[in-house]
Length: 151
Image 1: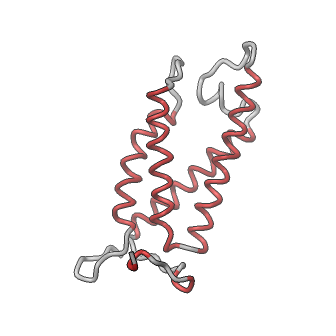
Image 2: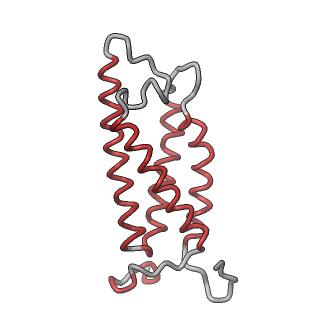
C-alpha cells in the first residue's frame, strides 16, 4: 500500500507517459466543451445534437435534464482541470473516473437505450473513448526505472 501514497509536495510530479497526459488534457477539453454545450444551447443539445424531439409534451423537461447533466459534466471537468493544473500526480485517478464515466455510459445505454433516427456523437464516442481511457490509464502510472520512458 505504501507505494500508492502521494505526499503533498509531490502532487505536481507526474510519472506516467507524456501521451497519457496529453490525452487527459484533450479529454478534459472535450468534457468542458460538451458540458458548456448542454448548459448554454437553447435545447441543451437534446434536439440539435442528440436528435430527441423536444417539441412534444414534456420536451422542456428533457431540455432541463440536459442542462442539469451539463452542470454535472462541468463539475467533473473542473475537477479534471484542477488535476492538470495543481496535482498531476493524480492523473491516473482522473483517468479512472473518466474510464468509469465512459464505460458507464455504454452500460447504461445498453440497459436503457434511447431510440433516435441518428445516434448522437456520444454513442459512438463512448465505444472509442472507453478503451482509449483504459489504455491511457495503463500508461499514466509511474514508470519503473528499468523501462524506457516516453519523453
